[in-house]
Image 1 (tube, helix red, strand yellow):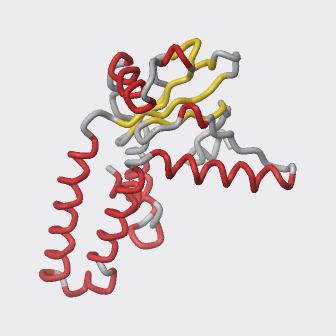
Image 2 (tube, one colour):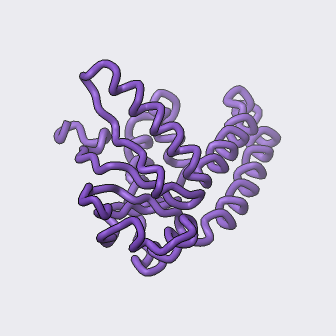
Length: 186
């Protein structure tokens, strides 16, 4: 799924129709149970969720690596809580191995594919996936983005709720949004 999402951004290489089909992979997975999400979040934060959240609701989006839950902090602020899927690290390790094998085969069996550097693409996707498995990196990036956007006053990014950040969980202030892939909504 993640490879499809990467390739989706390259309509210039693969064609618009193919890229649009790949775009359907984004947020259409079945969610995992809320009880599992609560347990994963509590384990990652090292404390009961009730110590931070007044409510923790069913997911509003489920993707390949994580799902997002609306919640309320004890102070009443609405937040989004991203929780990694259970066992996702094991699945990604297997997928990275398969992707590396496919890249080697593409280079060996398809000389024309060499110019696209399949092994370099596979290595980039692998590194990106490994970084996505630690939501503390995403929190740091989101914090920087919020700070930079806040300087000009024209844009706003959700703020990181650091008490709600762990390796497998990320809490941000709620931001109403639209999918960038929906031109009509934009």
